[in-house]
View 1 (cartoon, helix red, strand yellow):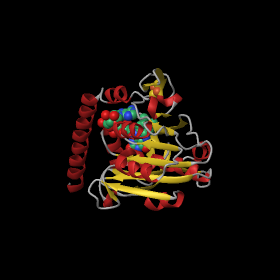
View 2 (tube, rainbow, N blue to C red; view 1 turned 90 degrees about the horizontal axis):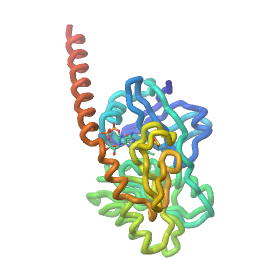
View 3 (cartoon, rainbow, N blue to C red; view 1 turned 30 degrees about the vertical axis):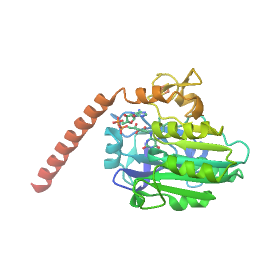
View 4 (cartoon, rainbow, N blue to C red; view 1 turned 135 degrees about the horizontal axis):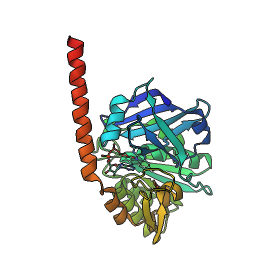
Length: 289
Ligand SMILES: Cc1cc2nc3c(=O)[nH]c(=O)nc-3n(C[C@H](O)[C@H](O)[C@H](O)COP(=O)(O)OP(=O)(O)OC[C@H]3O[C@@H](n4cnc5c(N)ncnc54)[C@H](O)[C@@H]3O)c2cc1C
Ligand code: FES
């Protein structure tokens, strides 16, 4: 079991937990992920290593509560509580390559995961630009952290309350217009966003890496759940990725496969909500009596 040392909430759905795991903190590399199980009946879910600190022996996960397990984590993960299991680091580390001018685009689930990659590029001597997307100013997090490892930071908000009004693709477009010498773009977020970023860079011939998020179960190449098609070939995102060349990814197939279990996911969330509500009711009655 792995103890949660700290938690910070960034919005009503996004929160950070720092977990004690010295061995993983030493082994982790940018771009890798873990498979988490909250309790012994819990499902296994993949989460990116948003940060790791070998000296403190901790790894950091930033979670968006979108369904049953992530909402249960939001309700139950507190400093002092434990995760039943934390397996990893998994996946191929991101390749950093030669120093150049690198743009990291993070939206939604992708804001935190892009951070260790940009830090690695900065440490490697690259000029680093971050383009980060949020719904509004009050949902912005890690701005200071990103500013420390970036030469430029473009914030984009849907309502224009901070930075550029618009989507991360608008921010990326602006950066590509200003800088004609970009060597690489890294995009992490919803599949539709990574697809749009890849389309923007394709016509300019800029290498574009995306971190794919198909449904994963074992994370070791055994179940086939995370199958994706890249350059016409079948790949397993958990062992061959999760980073791939965005210009070669079949995003339509990825999006279809991500929606396969929507009915089951909705039913699982409703069951958990009912169960949590009846537990709260019982707790209320016993506290009263
Ligand atoms: C390599 C990788 C890294 C990820 N990193 C992060 C991260 O750092 N932070 C974060 O908040 N989320 C991350 N995700 C997504 C996260 O795993 C899903 O949001 C989570 O599994 C949803 O589970 P749920 O029960 O809360 O929601 P559900 O209602 O069960 O699912 C909601 C949606 O999440 C996706 N999903 C569901 N189960 C899985 C699964 N086992 N594997 C992958 N996707 C699934 C599906 O698109 C589904 O429609 C990552 C996914 C992958 C593949
Ligand atoms: S998660 Fe099972 S093969 Fe990748």
